[in-house]
Length: 113
Length: 109
Image (cartoon, rainbow over all chains, first blue to last red; front, side, top):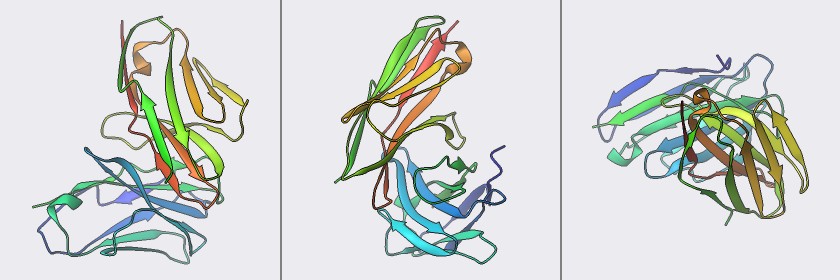
C-alpha cells in the first residue's frame, strides 16, 4: 500500500458526461501528480500541483481540469467525455516538488460508453 | 519535445539469467531520470531516481546507471517475482515528466 488513495476505483459513464476523480496524497506529501494510462499511449503526464498551486502541465486537454485543495487532496475533472478518454487515471504524490520519490495510487479505471 | 524510448519492448529470461533494459532519452534540461516497476492493474512502484551522468544506484537484484543519453537497468540473477513492466521516465527542469512505453519482463522458473 503506497498510502495514496484514489476514488472511485472504477467508473462507467456515457459520452458527453462529466466526472470527478479524487486523490488523497500520502500524509505529509505536498505534491500531487495526475497521469493518464491507455493501451495505445502509455503513461502520460497531465498536471502537477504543489501545496495548492499548479506547477507543471503536460498534455492535458482543455476539457480536463484539476485542483488541489487546502487539505492537499486533489480532484481531476473530466468533461464532455469521449470514448477515447477511457483509460486508467493515476495520481501520485511526493514530499516536495522536483525529482523526488513519487508514490502512485492504484488508479481509477474510467470507461466511457 | 522530450522523448523516452525503451528497449526491448519485451524480454523473456530464465531464472538466474542476467540482462539489461535500455532507456534512451532526449530532454530539454534533465532534472531527474526515474525507474518504476508496474504490475498488471496496479500503479507504478518507484525504484530509483538518477540525477547526473555517471550516477549508479542499486536495490537488491537491480542496478540503474545513467549517461547523458541513456540509462540502463541491470537485473542480476532474476527471479520469477521480478516479472513486471519496467518504466523509465525523465523530468525536465520545467517540471514536465515524460514516460517511455516500458519493457515487459517475464522471468521463467
